Image: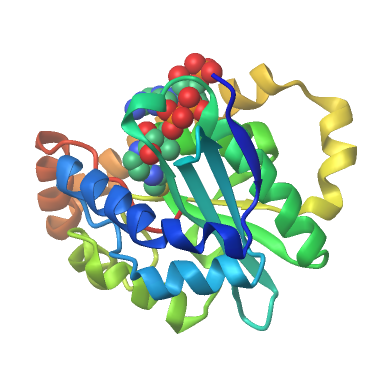
Amino acid sequence: MNITIGVADNSHLKFSAEICNMIEEASKKRGTGIAKREPEYIGKKISEGKAVIAIQNQNVVGFCYIESWEGQKFVANSGLIVHPDFRKTGLARDIKSAIFDLSVKKFPNAKLFGITTSLAVMKINSELGYKPVTFTELTTDDTFWKGCESCVNHDILLRTKRSMCLCTGMVCDPSTLQKNNQNSNQKAIWLDFKRFISDRKKRIQLKARDNPVLSFFYRNAKALPIHISSRN
Ligand SMILES: CC(C)(COP(=O)(O)OP(=O)(O)OC[C@H]1O[C@@H](n2cnc3c(N)ncnc32)[C@H](O)[C@@H]1OP(=O)(O)O)[C@@H](O)C(=O)NCCC(=O)NCCS
């Protein structure tokens, strides 16, 4: 397909509006709370060298950028988008890998984290070395959590006092990565992760039996299509 993936620079500023449109279209299609991004914000990320872009025939086909929280203690790779014509070809995996490397280079002491309901993102993250965690392990930076306000499920996050939501929280500490990678292969990591998700579902089901709020949310969540979070 001849796609070039690299760190975005000022020559890519012209794609800012198109990237926002792609994100908005994906959000509409899935009826989700993917946060709306403004072209100026995307442009700022590009100018700061905090974004990875995928180009084919001088067209943008994929994008992702870096955000940092709590004085650079935590870093998130946000706004991941792949043009619909190029999905399921491994492009998101390559973009995430490139933005992961860029994040570690720019923020060597940070932990990488994200919250998502996207199975594709969970899969890619676990291959990169992210582990599922409770929300208490994530940044406490209010600015990050404020970003959840545009999500359709925000009421759940409020009701649970930020302790849980439909998203799964994932963290990667790059400083421990090499050691871990020597001991495990990617398939085993993915199987572990799937086991975690299945156990989590059972735990929520059990809790829902005694908790009217959770019970309501769980009943409705099962009937709804999975929502993609804005935070990856
Ligand atoms: C999510 C998204 C970025 C995935 O992009 P992609 O280029 O299709 O992903 P890849 O081809 O790299 O797939 C990586 C893995 O995820 C799997 N995958 C991809 N899309 C999937 C889906 N919708 N459901 C389940 N698994 C999926 C792939 O099969 C692949 O696994 P495999 O190699 O074991 O088969 C893309 O669908 C998208 O842009 N969606 C709209 C925006 C969005 O949801 N962003 C993420 C916000 S959290």
